[in-house]
Image 1 (cartoon, chains in turn blue, orange):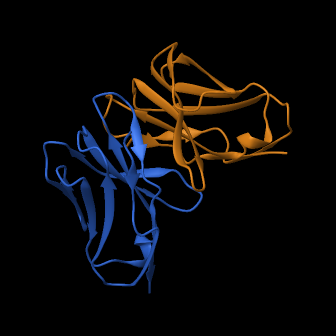
Image 2 (image 1 turned 180 degrees about the vertical axis):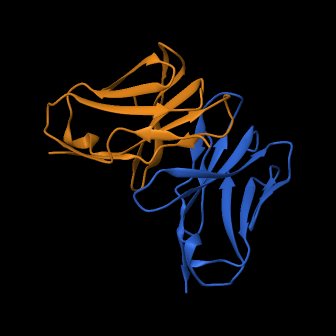
Length: 112
Length: 112
């Protein structure tokens, strides 16, 4: 059974710092992996989707990498801003179906 | 931009009431999803629909039913609300299976 873990559960950094959020999964036979952002009391916003054949995806200050063999993905945020404060969730798709397995998220606070 | 809207942001209902949560997407997506999100348990899939009038049970369908009479609208029904159904309910849609899911803002339901 696939398990998705995100450590740390919470992270506080000063503005301007580059940071890395981690996502690990136990079964490397994944189809794809998605990173989402969730603001308090709101829905999820898709940030990046990486197919299993890809190593990384970039969008603006965000870069997500995927290492299937080690069961890890990282989300790199460059030059963090207070507006980046949110909970970041990763979700693994195991096959070409609809099912996503979500991690429990990392709550990020960027201090001005 | 994909827009997924949910009929209510907050709802307060009594135990035993029948509750309807509605979700509408404006991008002609085939696939629609209902999740609930609880602290410590993450996001769990309740039901999924891949076409009008077609549905599949997710991980936690007990106590819920769904309706998809039109492509753009997917309703979640709590037949007889119970206090353990107090939760944040999130609707999502996607164009293709296993591709990016777009989420609505969520409905926070309190059952008294």
